[in-house]
Image (cartoon, rainbow over all chains, first blue to last red; front, side, top):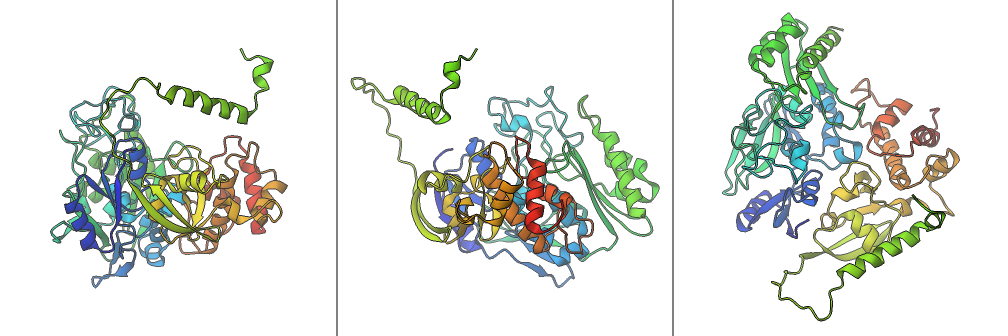
Length: 316
Length: 212
């Protein structure tokens, strides 16, 4: 690991000011992904700003009837919150489908959104990777790509976003609240939060350098049956091959988002509209334009069959 | 091919031999002194926390994980380094009542925290009920993952008591129960390559007062 200096920020303003002052700084909260990447020297910050003690660890009701989840709320606490369990079951389910108990106790809401791909070529510093080292190429294209994206990828990168939580956030129309170094706040709908890889796969979100996530907000509950179904190589503690998150109403309408298929949680409004017509129609709309390789083409029928099972379960 | 003589080497002997040979290649010859740009000394920071009820103050290289601080500086070697990447759970300790992977957290981030390691749960003379149950149920073979398994297991029972749901909890709005299925899911962050899993579940169930 490269040596770095460390400071603890007590306020959001102090954190963003520290970032503006320092050279090559990173915010650290749970640290479960960043430290791992620093050990491998995939991330090499010169300065760490500890934001884990900022007073952003509350879940508050919003005037609109939704919830404002502080950026530092731990995954365990978010999954366990009685309001989340009752009104946003999809979010609880997605959270407890991810990682291990130890990691969920440390990982934060904001950090979960910002975690980096688990593409094995991104992790292997002996391999070319445009995301890790722009311009070096992509070893996954033409390499082992069973775990990789089937839609939204580019000639530069076929990595997937690994988060389960983000899939639920996308289906629930969450928004990301941030503050930049100048103290300016903005709200980013999660639909617009992740950037397509294109020719710049190292740029993963629309956040500017030094822009800090302060909260994730959920609109008022939509009711319905909430199901998150994750398909993985082992029964627990593994990243998704694919995952399906749905909210289905009694009349068969609803919303659906996928994990493990692209660079972001995948949701298409035309596919939501097909929900009353069943899994085949929904999948066709969701994965329209998919370009799988020979090793990950299985993800397309797997999505359709998983969704069929989920929709049958929702009917009860 | 290994000879019988090689088999007789103790593990400790191997480790000492290994360290000695590393030292031999890293000591520079006295005569050769090529000029190199001076590497700036690594950044250090002070941190104070409580470990097993005792206040501790350390000055650490900022890169030091909580795991390395416990093992290398405080000599609490009960906590084990397995993968050092949060995948195996051997380094599990309890911080402010919650189990975490001590390898994936910086020591300097734990100012004021209360840390409990396997040494703080019990001693050979006065074992924690979970330690006792692991012995009774033979919940290990080589024992390397055991401190992490036990710290994790103690925290798992607290998590169920606190109503924290898991992936296998059927009803999100009901209190989770101690069942073998729940325990298996909740213990999935602790790998045991000897495969003592079924006995580990028996041990935890015993402490919880349920039948596995």
